[in-house]
Amino acid sequence: MTGSGAHDPAKEAPDTTLAGDWSEAQELSGALASSPDEERLMRSVLENEEQAVEDGHLVTEAINRSVGSFTPDLMFQNLVKDYRNASRLYGETLIRALSGYSPDYVRKNVNIPEFQQALSRRIEENVEALQERGLLDEHGFLTARSEKLAALVLYTEELDALVTKGLGKQARKERSPYGEPDEAVTYKRGKHRFRDLALKRCIKTAVRRGHDRLRKEDLKAYDREERGRIQVVYALDASGSMRGDKLAESKRAGIALAYRAIEAGDEVGLLVFTSKVEKALPPTRDFTDLLKELTVVRAGKETDLARTIRASLELFAREHCTKHLLLLTDAVPTTGKEPRKETLEAANEALSAGVTISIVGISLDSEGESLARDVVELGQGRLYRVKALDELDAIILDDYDALG
Image (cartoon, rainbow, N blue to C red; front, side, top):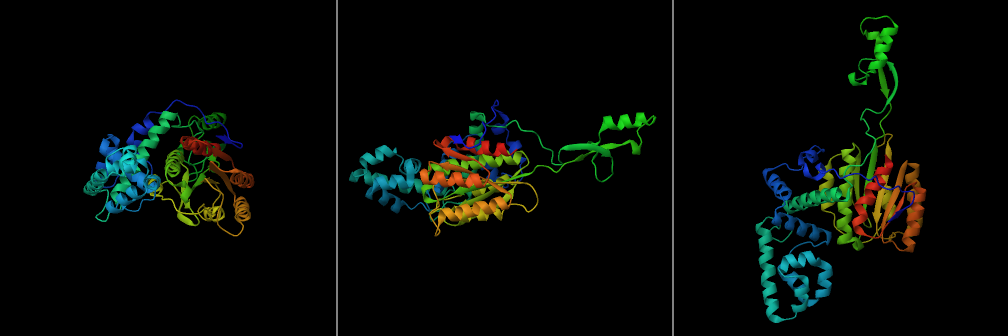
């Protein structure tokens, strides 16, 4: 990974309370569990119960691979008719969970009639078991309960990963929600808080005036500059080429960004795009809402960067603050009459609106990298080239930390 104008992330010892203290996470806006069933799910995940974690992985994999429903007959037919294509569609996790065999074993034996009978029976039994555990409804579609379980597993595993990588809490200047202290001025009730009192200045003023005790006219307080609030919109490419591992790691990186930024008092929005905007969530401090929306993102079709950039401009607050679009994609735009021209025009509109743009490119080809470089140059942001997917969360956090 390299970055245009990027700095190296600060290196700190892992903060082991990040993933281990659930109450800290609950302090973020939005409760992570709001019903007895959700509390049981949360407890199962936190206690690392094997079945709950496996179920969470299975649901996440199904969503990331855009598997709409679990239909035993159709899944069996796909595996038997063209195993290579089915393996690309379902992936190893789903094949193992549905068949009860290793993918390699299925591949070697899938043409044997006796094995096909056993395979058909096992798929049907395993789908029924998923329904009994409340992960699938009677028609084989994922339930709301299964999506909540997947979100909890994603959340806890990403925070564990941040601790392991030493990316827990960065050393950043702590920013008061009331701003940074400026020059001490005469205290005014209603304008200043008690904690804004400049005590040394108050005492010096009283002594200079010969007062034996502090009087109202001696009180001095700090005015506060406007706080440097940050709003980040995480724009996630959900085109077909992102299906599978790319989408999975992009979601984890989004969770890392949301946790870090909200913990720092900033706001994160989400924009999921293909050839159209699939989901647009304005910057918020509701971590639970972001987690839920990230979890259920599915891969679609083409990519339209120009529409995405323009849509992001509608999400940012109108008042003055730092506004940043972090765009993650693996392809050049594929829609519109002149995709490149339209994308650069949109980037220029973002600049005029006070929105900076960074791009995280996953294995971009030369044409894609050239366009991405021009966009971030216009958008006064950074370009990151990703070669290994497990770098994504570190890259995303590096870009966010550079804003502070």
